[in-house]
Image (cartoon, rainbow, N blue to C red; front, top):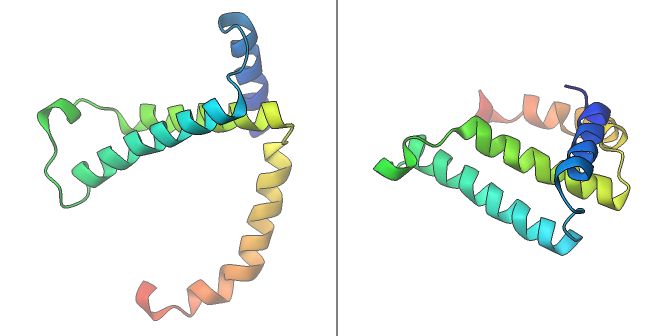
Length: 108
């Protein structure tokens, strides 16, 4: 997957299957909900909480894809080119965080 194609695919899906994009505030609430579902799986499956039987069949990949879908929607409707933004952020993080992480004794 490349990000520009993913943004185009989401836009095509919205046009073919949806009436329109939900407004930005609704999508922000949706994103929060989807991130909460990811957090629940992670906390119960990989954290110290016991996993409820009703959560055992939940697919982490599917929930992460839900988060990605809503992020792509938000990018599309706000005019953000996520490829440009991601590339810029990765360069910044590489410059800013390389030595910090290499010198972090907690990570050794």
